[in-house]
Length: 201
Image 1: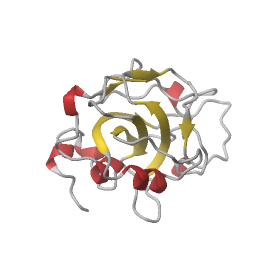
Image 2 (image 1 turned 180 degrees about the vertical axis):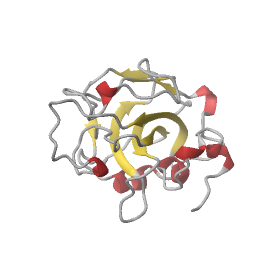
Image 3 (image 1 turned 60 degrees about the vertical axis):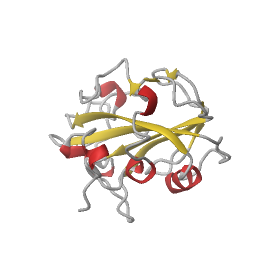
Image 4 (image 1 turned 120 degrees about the vertical axis):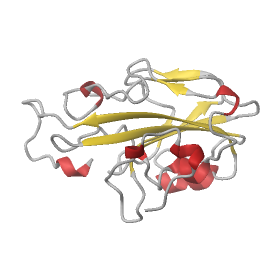
């Protein structure tokens, strides 16, 4: 497996070193955390387990809240790509995409818990929503929230694919940042459909 560049490897735990992460293609040592650009969540610290309320293990689960500092000067738009860095790769070897968000203004901001973003693209299951993490019982998977600031606004319509989003912003990144959160599969609540395939997410 191709190793991550040092600038990114040092920002993520070894278990989340998937070479297909979007940021490995789009970012570099100069843009990572440029000007103090950073993303956090009021619901978890970096490296802290996701609460089940953001996963398929609880009914009425929603996307976690995210906050970010001001991106580098000249940034026009912000894009979020959340991926499973431990498994669920598609046929191309890319990590499973859990969330594609764009249309966020290039300034300090936040998304509230469960808030509907301005524009969303297709996740690994082809839906334009937060793909609820659902690892097998006892298995830990690592989710990497990646934010990119661009010097030009995106023109893609909602429903675009991961590859379309990446291709549209490649070469225009002014800054990027990552936030990592693992989640270990736990017994599903009684409401869960026993037919659900835990390997899918």
